[in-house]
Image (cartoon, rainbow, N blue to C red; front, top):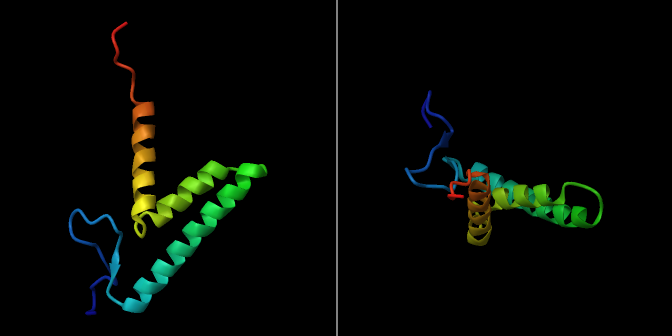
Length: 95
């Protein structure tokens, strides 16, 4: 890495898998952290569905953290975003 060159390089256009680190240890550490944190958020969210707490919010946050690493999490997150977008869209049906 030369002077003035950032340690984190953006991926190619259309790449939705986050930043790419030049150093493999940083990349692996970030991957381990994000997968662990996302999994813990999902587990905590499931527990909070039974006890008082923002269970659904924690589950959605965990899915968002896992989405760059899991196709299933990415599909669920994309589906939820579309549902929210459609829910927020004004109703243009004629009456």
